Structure formats: C-alpha cells, structure tokens
Length: 277
Image 1 (cartoon, rainbow, N blue to C red):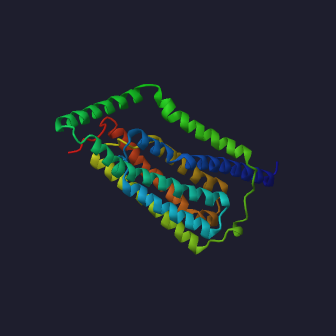
Image 2 (cartoon, helix red, strand yellow; image 1 turned 90 degrees about the vertical axis):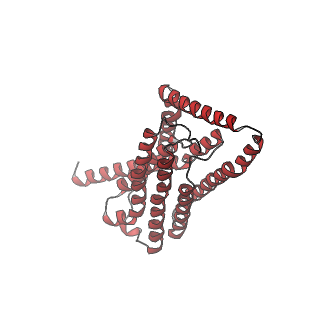
Image 3 (tube, helix red, strand yellow; image 1 turned 135 degrees about the vertical axis):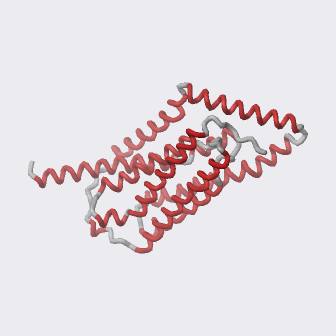
C-alpha cells in the first residue's frame, strides 16, 4: 500500500473513532441529568445540589443553544441544545419544589413533633444514611448502580454509531470561523467552568456530598471526554482546532473540576447527611 493509501486509511480510521466517540457523548448528554433528578426524587430533597451550580449551568446551555442556532448547526445539534435547556428547567423546578413547596408541606405535617423527637429523627437519618452508604460500597450494588448504567450508555453509543452512515473529513475551508458563534461558544465555556465552583464550595462547607448523584458526575466526565475526543480525532488541522477551541476548553476544563468533586465524594463519603444547627 502506498503512502496515499495509508493516509486515506488513517483518515478513515480517525473519522470512525470520532464518530463512535460522538455517538457515545450524545448518549451521555441525553441521560446526564436523570441520575440527579432521580436522587432528589428518592430523597425528597434537593439540599445536595447548589442552586448556583444549576443556575449557571442553565445559562451556559442557553448560550450554547444561541450559538448553535447562530452558527446554523445540524438539526440534531440544535435538538440536543434544546434538550439541555429542558432538562435544566426540570432540575431547577425540582430544586424549588423540594426546598420550598415540599418543605412547607413537610413542616406542616410535623408541626406538632417535639424538639427531642426532631433531634432523634435527624440522628437516625444520619446513622441510616451512613449505614446505607457503607452497605452500598461494600455490596455488589456498585455494579448495578454505576457500572451497569455506564455500560448501557456505552452500548447505546455503539449502536447509534453502527446505525449511522459513514462520513468523510470535510474541507477545512468549508467551515470559516464566524465571530458571533465563537463569542457565544467562549461565553458558554466560561459558564460551564464557573458552574462547578458553587457546588465545590457548598460540598466543602457542608463536609458532605449527601444528595448528590455520583453517576451524574460520571456521565458528565464520560460525556466531556468523548466529546473532546470526537473533535480531536476528526481533524487535527489548526483551523479546525481553533474553530472548536471553546468547546474543547469547556469540556476538558469541567473534567478537571469534576476531579475535585470526585475527591470530595471520597473525602466525605462517610459523613452522611449534614445535621442542621
């Protein structure tokens, strides 16, 4: 095989790997917020999530949608951006429901409970939470709670890739750099990077990650990692990298920040529910 044939084969392999990563990333983004929503429904509480986190994230998704529409991206890209905003709205709605409406109903129901009973209840909740945390870690539920959902997403990404048609690398000149969408991309990346900070601070102050879904952050890292890989494997010319630099910074930067949250999951795993003063 001559050099031209090797170059074409290499380019085809890169595009295939990029497509597989893109399909996997898409599967992650579709289910990203579901673990956290389920966790809040299960606990009937949203105390674990920082309102600053989901609010700034929402703003990032809005600017991402505006940028996608402005750049005239593919319909599926716009659809995904719209889905992000819908999922964010559900998350914010869940937060305010459990911190305001449900809390008032719960307080009214337990209005006649004594202070001693409340304190006993809080202590029992903490001990049950700690026991539950240890039992999950020490049992085979790790497979069903974390590994199995990730394998399902990976499998969905693979099936999505296999069912899609093959594509060839495009001419770099076919995607000129437009200032407007690029500005929105960098604003969106900055918001995504800033969103994690309130959550990291809240976890540190509470010395707890109670109410946060670990699977949510695992999906986030997997989605961002495959998204960045999709870009880097597709083409490596400087114009293409510059065109997608804001999205690369946003994806790789949030992976770095999520590593701090994973560290907090490890540090505070035995703390259970925080007891209010």
